[in-house]
Image (tube, rainbow, N blue to C red; front, side, top):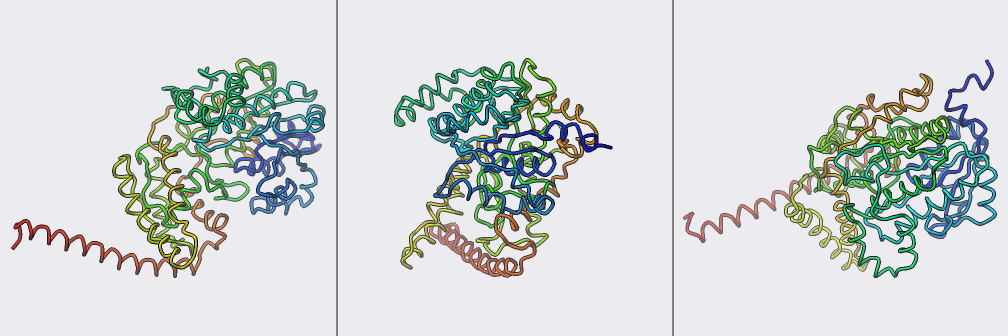
Length: 501
């Protein structure tokens, strides 16, 4: 059997190709790049990377491949990094900050484009969000229109790009703002004026992120006609399920960051409707559907309308609510004694959808202790920082509130058809089926992954267990004093009122 015959259909499609990926240094991008390099024998891979925090692009690439995620790949293919090249750019700049020479190189040499780059700051400034999420998509499509070898273009959107629809179908919905009008606005209006008109611009969209993604999808519709193109809409992306290692994540944003803070006892109140379906999906599954949709787009070249894939758990995966997910985390922490040496309080959580109760408990549970901690730091001659940190946490929880308290209904027939179109081999290599997910196992691996990859601690940490024991002593003393004071004050009040003698 020849090497070509030994490859699956998707692997044959990617074999010997030059792939250009934006957003590679992000969470999804990391997992996608690793999977492509490990499972598809590419010729070369080109990554759009910007300089950040005084680090040049070469340094950022080295740091990316130094993460634990790439260990299996580098063990199997030690020279694989020789296939990877950086194209310097920045999606916040016109033409993605790509030089004229690099743009011409892309036009002449790239076969497959995967546009993952996005700012996921839900309520970010309209200007920056539009530059990164909308203008970069338009400008990259204009480059792609000139590509002589283009086999496939995948745009990675979000399942929440049209949350104002009662049923979110796998179609590109019209938007009340045309892309070029929005781009012209943010390019020419001042920040202060844009900020003042943002609420009006949002219309029925909850934040700038979801609006920008809807506009960007319309950019794909406008500039991607007559192209082998597809749109993938994942919901909230969380820790890897299996590949290349279970429980991997590095992003402190969105749910992974909140889960870590919950496990450390740093968050004890969440704005969540515990009965709602958890719109979460493992990162390795997302990488697989992106790769498969690239293959599909080449097979259905010039398909009209452009294929859209709502990748959500609602209709395929076993049921999981947000309340069940949070309970899994707290339960496994205590059952398996997976405590961290960085624990700040006994892990527990209260969930609510009440603005008043959330504000009261966040103040008591977080702002009061944070003020005490900052007072201590100030007296010790150090810079107070804890209140400032909890303001960010408060803002993150409130940003997530819309998604954790709203019910969404999705159609995913295109995803199911895509799974059916896979060969038996590709279904194993690029598994997108959500029916095999065991949510309990996923949450356990999530906790272990937080310890290993985000906190850099061993799974069974003696230091963590000792710290938890110390915290529990303080916890019981504090609760005894607190409830003692409450009972005393209640008794004093009742006595003053003449109810008790």
